[in-house]
Length: 364
Image 1 (cartoon, rainbow, N blue to C red):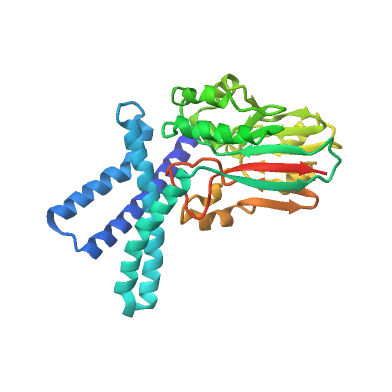
Image 2 (image 1 turned 60 degrees about the horizontal axis):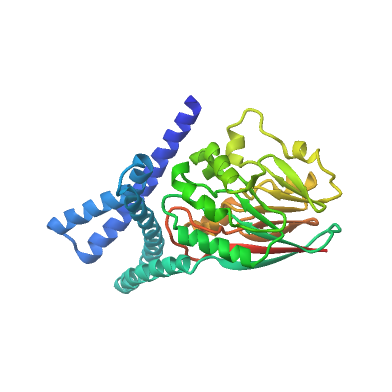
């Protein structure tokens, strides 16, 4: 317990330091560019203090009539701030290298920021795209299998029921054999997500809907996740599997949870209950341990978590942290597909990435 508190405190201090620094960095650029002084400068400081702390306040307070609006403001501010930092950093580099053109460079940056923010919002408003993926199985299948892969839906206080209905409608129109959800579906306490249960219950496929937990299910509470899935007719495959027409569909819990468990379940222990001559599909929230999974008998791994960065500058850091950051990769005769996610976390924005519903066709 003490170890968890220390880790949380360290994370909180690091987060506040970085996020506070980002706010101050953008604030200074605005003050210098527009030559803001006096009461206007004081007002700008208040705006940065309130908007910068609103997302954290929304998460901590939780109750209150205006909390959803405060949380939404905080999430949107976080996205705008990230894009602003990205653009202004590039601006500062160019201004340093080309001091003669400093004014032109900063003018361009100040014009670019609102354009990129608008594009990132419009990108989310258009909804997830249908991503067509084809995988050739290294083992004989009974027939072609259509798998709809959802990930990182992030149902919570900021989620619209109409948006969820749109996702369900798009998925059902694809007439899947199997629907899988690779973590971070539930991202809030039960009372804030229960309104989505009747909608998610409408997901239809030949063999059902299956899910594994992600790190956000752990934050929100695994009991909430399990209760939600039970009511929504979604079968949870954390550290277990099911046989579907010659295909072994196997799930593991999230890596974050395993790190905090004394005796984490090993994938070979789960696989020992199945005939490895069948085609083995692994559902794992984070796109990690793929090569090890292949060596233990996995033919296809489906993951999410990365969001393909979602917004800059994270887009450029994610491929450094994760080898299988986004898309389809092959190792030996096995494959891994990492989804960019069906929804968004935090900022309702995406830039240089798109939300997606993966329509994966598995054939001989």
